[in-house]
Length: 85
Image (cartoon, rainbow, N blue to C red; front, side):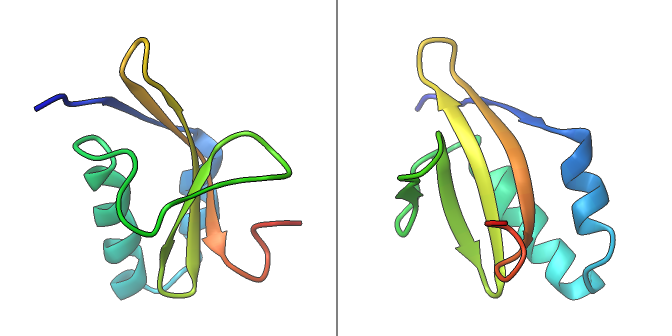
């Protein structure tokens, strides 16, 4: 089993600090799971920008995958109403 290195941009922590604790735990669990499976069921490749997105309730996690060096970089996370602006 291949494990990817997971990097989270500082801005993501700022985006997530305003969400309820219960949702924060779920979002962080989804982010952590990307290290083992960067393309989980339900993930979508974005059309208008590079990267992928996964859903966790009303929240979206946007990230990029580099298969050559086995890394996942989480670049955005937040409420679905605001994430695509």
